[in-house]
Image (cartoon, rainbow over all chains, first blue to last red; front, side):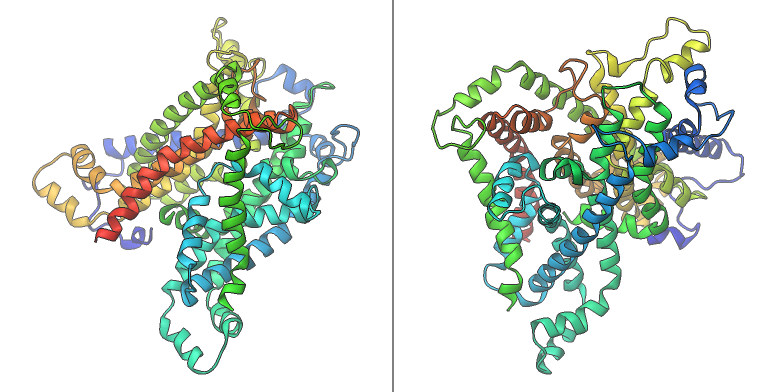
Length: 300
Length: 283
């Protein structure tokens, strides 16, 4: 994607002669239409969440709010009910925070060591395990759901937060290990050899040489994991109990509950709140986010 | 030391990926209900599975959703990438906008589109209020087209990723090709179809595998958008497995269904892996 800076020489299409040539109108027109379409749901979410219920019942979902109210947001955050609990989505938010932080740290720690071992130490059988891991990434989660329930029950972690951390570490492992392995392989081997000659061991090289050199890839891995784990629904609903349900699960329970009157504005406020964390990460990280998904996808 | 450090990886590979998969396949031949029991019943679960209407509907939905989302995301993704590749201004802005839904979870995606497609307030209501009183567009409440309602949401969420991958592929094409095509007077669209796309074969195959393995996983989107309804009209296999195992306590039936899912994935993955890695060894 770096070639974008290269300028106008060798442009792909015929060269644009005038700013308002037919080609440009078509090109930008199409792109603007597409962009509007993609923005639409976000716009609808925001607009709906700022309206009062009477206005929603009368009006049109695309119209901007006549009277802006933040009450739906307050209600979604602090009062919305799931079952008997009426302390809002804040509970799910903090649960997700408590799940995401240890899961990201543990999964990245394990995967980076894996990648390092695979890239530089190549122990016997390493490639076999790595191949299994990569193929494992394609196995539908449903196949492994129940065996993991049994494993977690055996070690007494089923239904707990740490059980879910283990699950996220397991399913994050293929893609992250691949990411780190490829990165460490790309580092000059002389570095590793020199450190070996100096008598540095496995952990010495990892902490003193590899870690400081690979900050960018750690950031990419973090972006990948934070969004992935925050957005997870399946593992949250299978491996935790209602009082530690992550935000996505709680959101779904709030919005799709059959009891009570539907409060669409509160629902949309809750939906934005849940999407806010990955959205902020996406807009702040920009190119690194793209790099993360591209590295994961293309090499997979 | 390296081996000790890699213990988590070895355990995951052996105990979870290999062990767990084998365990599920083996226990799909039992009559386990609430708890796994090694009471063998042969292929009974599979027979029951293929006689269950809910499963048949799930498979049909997955086929429709799968084929449509494969075709549309490849076509839309490629066209958008080609448009962005015209050395346009604000390329980053356009790319950022088209890719942002990918950062959102399927739950959020499903809920937003549930709202937009709501017949009383959303698109249908608006078109009607513009004067077309008989206009009907209520995919989420119509059994026949509900799966297309889910497809709309799925495409909105996923095409950005395909576009980015395609764009990376287009940028990898040698600029000389374009110059040569222009010198020979070949129209741009012909260059794309007959020269560029064949050159991007590896990118297409990777995206294909990526989309395919994503399709089989469709679960949260359906749960959020329709909960499988109206009736059972938008059920999908992943949801069938979850519901059977955890809500209906019919474990072995769930195992049989998930084994079928595994089989479906294997049919896609194994030829791909053979082409990809088999040819690499010959080089």
